[in-house]
Length: 255
Length: 267
Image 1 (tube, rainbow over the protein chains, first blue to last red):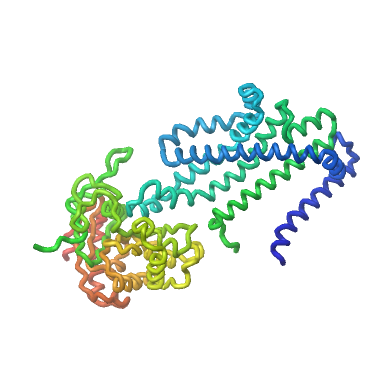
Image 2: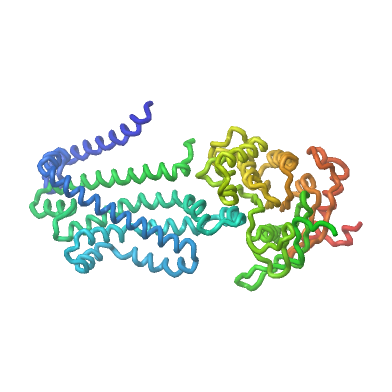
């Protein structure tokens, strides 16, 4: 079977089946829109607000990506510090876990007050805070579990620590890093939307959702959810593509 | 005046600091390996054999005593050492060829890429890995990976090749194949080697001299000169002389393990 057709066709068929099932479920139960909108109601909602969807979708997307990039930089830096120094690992780990355990919904009003009016900054910060943890943990574990022999083959030749990091530690950690990045992508979306829904500045898909709620436009609310899912899928597969390019070696041939 | 040996270990004592206090591993150890010879070190498990390799490679500094390489005292790692371990530690993200080239990137950064590739290809062909240059390590068998690892340890023409049980995890037949490859490599690429092993047959088949270390803390307990032809076929191991060597070594190991005494050995 044609492999491209297979790769696109199978997930697409699954998505269509899911939408059909959803439509059927609403129809068979006779649910009104305010209980559960059906996919066929969403089409007009998408069309009616198409410009808003594009504008707000873009707002959500770029903030999420910037937050995620910050998380990658800070998470990798933190992971490196913790991965190379046992002292730092022992010192920072409980702090990090505690920080991660705080529900980010509670941080939203704090940040909103702290940077009043800086809506972009608020949103990016939340996306960052919610998504850097898995990256930091995976990088630190990847580095600290590097077998000493790997280091020794280069150390015995007089290679510097920097050389060992670039030639061995970094590439060896990439599969773990991308694993964490896949988790971080979805988390970053949650962060962005938390802020967009709460903050009263009317930007992003979160605010579109909120305005759907205020005007009791239930199909719009469901349409936003679907748009968010779509953006999440796009970003996720961009990460998968990057993983294939940079850490494709970690994938074993099937069978 | 006689030429000093290539590797000289003089009165080396070393201990590791553990939670329960110092753990002595080497006690006044003296070893000398003349240039061009192959020395095997055998001894009971955990007697400090791997520590010895780290000291020679300059990865560890001894608490007392001195390690000399080529008439120079070893104080830090140097570029003239090649190492291979029981775990082939190939880099999974590199092809076999690029794995073999790795030491050249550190030792000879200015060497033209073309020459590096040529050198690596020659070695790979020598160990029978021709045609596998572009494969990833995960596509190779354990024995083939170990062959590639040997090529990597030799690619920069080190003065000293340190082998820390490189054949320990292989099945018996693959191991014997690799022993023969070692002899072949030695003929084509003369090197001085120190081999750590648990396999007495391996030590007799490969080495010119076998050193038996005592139990921890280790010191030289016994030295066996292996008087067998330089070019050895596997059946050399079944000659009476080799069988005698093996029996002697076996007994020395039992003494080192504390399961027999020197008096019994003399009988």
